Length: 324
Image (tube, rainbow, N blue to C red):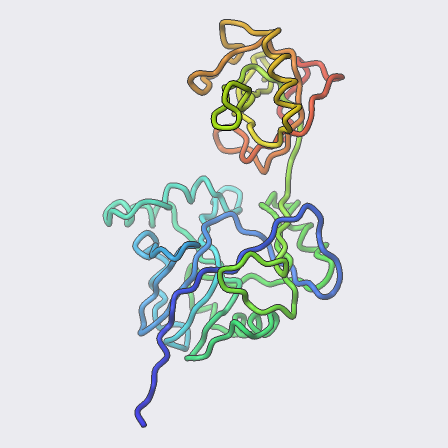
């Protein structure tokens, strides 16, 4: 009987379920949440290929990650992980830096960016090795196989450690280095291909503070004819109001009704912001203060993933400055 070689098939990744509170107990393993692009790494016949979360081939965009070729000690491997771009100033993953790489496929430009904005592949699961599927093995078994790979011989590839237990040490790192969050995974769980599973729980680090409402944008769809989003800002040291973006999520129907009436009473013709805002913004006197949560400040001093929380009636608008 001739030798039968198992050919890797591309898989859709297992997805985590978002929760606000951290699970507890020794049945969980904790990993850092990396702010990058989810990717499957396929190694076969000495060739490395990457697929994204929907199965699309993204190999051409990251040539610096494909030089490892036969360094694995096996020619048949499938890993799950994340492609990230590290900010050389902070040492942290930067999604903004990665965005310059995400959709570029023109060879000359890709080559240039791979030198100026290099990426790293962070592996956190092993799904197939040397002709054997690993998806039915436990998380701990898969991690042991993952850690056994020769990472010291793999430039731009790494497999960070995990923590078993309550995740306190992992969360300390998240807070200390202002990372996106953490993921808790059941130690006895199998890999559920293409499924969002309660066996993987992601908990995001969030920031919150007060902002001044200086305008709004009309809504569309179910919010047609009503407030769609609020244009919000903070004051700088010169007493100027700087727009930090728009918040359009987190509102209940009665919030929308409240803002519709309140903003109509304080409408004005000119912008209260000293910097440009989105076209078609309708302006109001900067009298209303809200609290919103968000994941981080961008390099352009705008909010990433802002969510409305509440109106704060006891805050002086002029006292609202950037906190973090």
